[in-house]
Structures are given as structure tokens and as C-alpha cells.
Length: 168
Image (cartoon, rainbow, N blue to C red):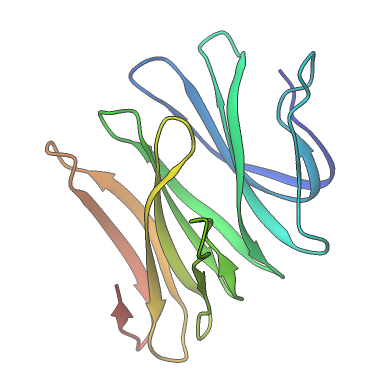
């Protein structure tokens, strides 16, 4: 199934879970239709704001669920996604303006000093389980670049920063 956007869609990452489902994560501007067909599942972005999306499809490409997250006037980048053994999805992202990471009421909005990161875990229905902001404490960038899980599903990550420290 194609994904259609009015303007500026950037599918960034793809992950297959142990149950055969496929997750696509990326960013969009204006709107995106994640299920072109009978149901049409369209997400509308906050005006003039980039947001990122998750979309889940079964092994035959049938749309199952989708959701939008984040809100940044410029930069939202998704460098990594990984599925755990319970088919939850862990997403690493970077942002450089205030970003709503989608936890519902109250929304958790984080304002970085420059470019900072987050790690977000969603369940198989795209509901947020937790989010960890990785906010640089200095004036430089702090970017999560790689995430992985060990054999016990503990999260490990690497990040890049210049003369900076991190608050988790």
C-alpha cells in the first residue's frame, strides 16, 4: 500500500516484529494518508510544523494502526527504531525546538538548549508506554545515534555530543 502526503514526507525507518508485522516511522508536513484504500487513515499535522508518524502493517501490507507524535518547527529526525521481544517499538529521535512527545494529558513538552534527543517506547497499538528525554545541558548538540537491546531487552544507546553532558 502506498503512503500519500500533501508535501514533504520522509519515511525514515522500517522494522519487522517477530509476529511478522511491519512498522514504518518517518516525518511529515501538512498531512499524510497511511492507508490509501477503503479506510483512508489520514493524519493532519499542526500547521507549519513537522511531526513524525508511526504506521503498522501486517505481513500482507494491510494497514493496522498509525499515530502522529512530536511537533517541531524545524528538525525532527528519527535515526533508529527497534522492536523488543514483546513487539513493542522503541524509537530514538532528535529535535531542536520544543517538542510534544505525545503522552496525552498532560502533554510532555521538552525544550532543548540546542538539538537534543528522546527515546520513546510504544506498544503494539501505538500507545506510548514511556518516553525519556535526553536533553543536553550545555549549548551544544546531543544526538542519540544508535539503539539496541540486549538479550534481556535492556535498552543500550550511543550518542554524540560536543563538550556537553546529558540529563536523563
